[in-house]
Length: 139
Image 1: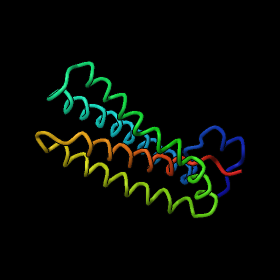
Image 2 (image 1 turned 180 degrees about the horizontal axis):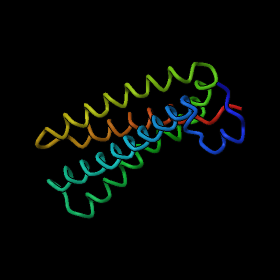
Image 3 (image 1 turned 90 degrees about the horizontal axis):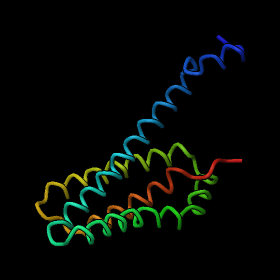
């Protein structure tokens, strides 16, 4: 069954591989956003145990920086990896690492007073995974 171009443009979700890709990408993006917000919230709540509002807010900003710096630093190596290796395998590996990050965040949330250093390490790993999950498009 071939789909003619005009029909294809009217309903792209009838093309099963695209529908699967789009759904997976949207769910993955939602999960990344949820993890990112949760990480910031954990840092704020942990910092509030020992610090004032100003310093806690500053640490939330630093957690954002801890996520961004690895993404920035690894942009070129991630693009090279995307060109050299199978992107599906890279995405699967990144998905597995995101799962481990989620488990680490859960374990840190179960601790009454997690160390801020551990949260910053998780944020750094989160940034590394995001760098490899979103390489520049192939040409």
